[in-house]
Length: 172
Image 1 (cartoon, rainbow, N blue to C red):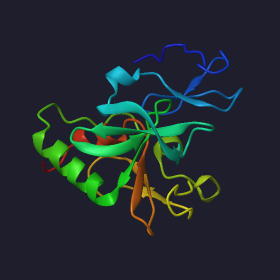
Image 2 (cartoon, one colour):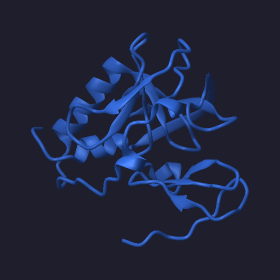
Image 3 (cartoon, rainbow, N blue to C red):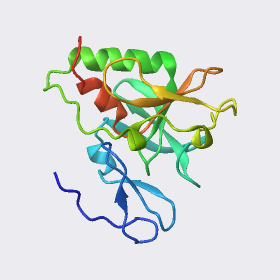
Image 4 (cartoon, helix red, strand yellow):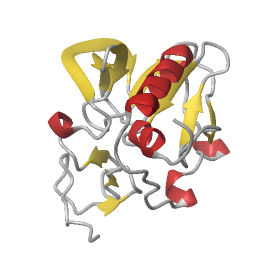
């Protein structure tokens, strides 16, 4: 599958692909973008337009918005389509989506340098308690690295990670 040429929505410079979730990175202005429009969100992200008080964990100068993934309330970013939710909501969401998924098993491409855990110098700061989040490979199905706060149990998922877990081979 060929990558389509794309220009940065912020500065217009060419961008390069960042891994299997459709995220793109602009080396010129250091902004991250997502190729898929929000109304076609691969994870089913719906945002209300109401800004939360929480800044996006990966985009500069962007506030998260209140939204949902199915029946679950979340905070999400319109620009990078990342999602912030609590650990118990994440567990229920994944369990329900895997149980109801009837499509083909998919593993997709995987590049540990792009899709793996963040290194020590690029770990995210939890927006709720201001501690560094842990970045690690999700222990369940799918080859996905998630970011989680051990103190307040917040979980940050990048665009496409929910779908990668949902569609991964394994017990449903």
